[in-house]
Amino acid sequence: MLFEPKTYRNSFSSERFQSFVITYKEADLWIGIDPDSYKEEMVELASEKLKEISDELEQYMAKDSFFKKSLKPCPVQENAPEIAKVMAAVAEKAGVGPTAAVAGMFSELIGQALLKNFSINELVVENGGDCYLKLQKSLVMTIFAGESPLSGMAGLEILPEQTPLGICTSAGTSGTSRSFGKADAVMIACKETALADAFATSIGNLIKKPTDVEKVLKRTERFEEIISAVLICEDQIGIRGEFELNILG
Image (cartoon, rainbow, N blue to C red; front, side):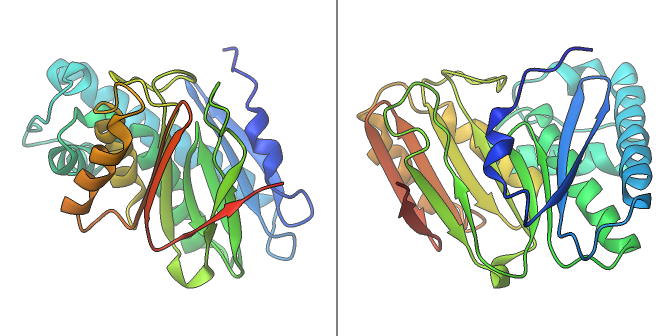
């Protein structure tokens, strides 16, 4: 398997985070842990968890092709594993197909497994732009937005008391996200990473042109689960929520 270079991972401080990458089939996750907490055994545990949940989901989707292919919310079979049930539930809230939540779901489950088995001060699990965070001090998440002139020019400041937290990004003009919109970036923060992933997809689908940013941003107010939202389309940006937007030099 060949993976696209994920240069945005370089934005995470190598002094603040000791990092490693785990891969399995199509999955490619970057994991950063504060050096004081890092243990070599974490790599094996994270890798084993990735294989476990990937195989479990793949086996279920082989029996339920509608779950795998649906672009709209759909029920799961009675014997569905917990991962499929959660993906279906968050997809129902966001109005998308359940696989729209898969990257965020993987980040969250692996992050939770690491926190359960090790004493960790700070943790970032990143999966294709979908992040699960647990922090001890504030962190500015840079917003990358493809060809937009605003790409890399701003970042959300995440405070430690707001974590654990999920921050997920979808784009219709770049990257591997499946989107029916034309947004250069839609960044959504929720307490559940899988839910943030699903909402990033559904909200991104609504942005077809720069003038859509304001009305779609207003629409995000309907969902109390959305803690913060940043929408970028060409030279237009909209932001609402708890986090401070930092202009980066």
